[in-house]
Length: 393
Image 1 (cartoon, rainbow, N blue to C red):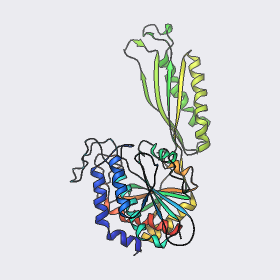
Image 2: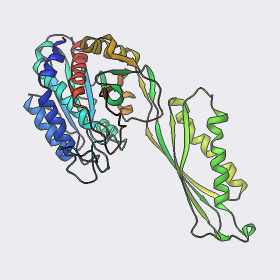
Image 3: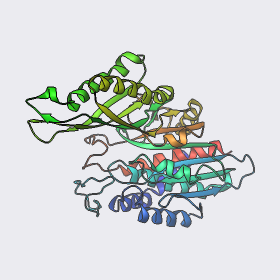
Image 4: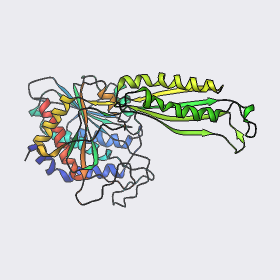
């Protein structure tokens, strides 16, 4: 058996205790004060240096290898925040915080990274360079990574490569899901306010009907993805809210619309605000209505570097065997703020690790009955640690 995997399995009970503590004490994005204090205490107990001047609830552990060799700086990232969901698992370690729970596996991700840190701390004489353990807040808000980047987490020393694991309830325990190239889509949002003039529903000709104009505009916006872009490009424009009116017989003067744009193509993403505004302006001018258009860029697409994927496949093969790796169906239109690291570090990729137990019902992420599978922790920790040993020879 792989040595790192053997060590991880030997400490499985200890890691499970950590994971269940985290599960019982969830905190929302940018509010993870107790979580980050717990992480810092664990890292210090492993003899790992703590980084300074990091975002308020972010934590960075720094471990320098003692072996002579390269000055490679390898980073491993885990997200630490929970979700505003009322847990209904009934577990003895169920969330002790009303209305909050770890329903996306971040308690497991945090534990896997702590476990990898412990393994590597015990192996520091066997690798060179530096390892950064990045514990990131607020992934669910899609702004935790940029907070960490702005705080300098990729600098001093400059990160050469970075990877992350995300749990996946649709793969067997310990199975690694991979994908080369564009995987997660960018995640942007927009708000459009349409302004006309109100009036009685019996006399629409005396109004500038903002609701009718906005309805035509929503339909016309769909022509961007269906008629302006190549059909093989993965791009989505969705209008998700439409608010207007106060009574059945009053034509409203204002309509507010919100939605999201997702794409795997960075050039298309950059072009979307201009494409949208051209249609918005044209349609609304035909109805003599004014507008305000606010487009907010969220996260970029995640484009996995094939060379990074190959390095992780090598590590996973060493730990669990070649039959433990599967190519994921993809790409997907969801977003992941790992993109902020991915956009800045060429040697980077994110992977999925299976947590499904044979014979048990698969419960999706973000579900009130979700519970992380502790049996996955040694597998994931060993893969992360093996990746570092291979990179930092």
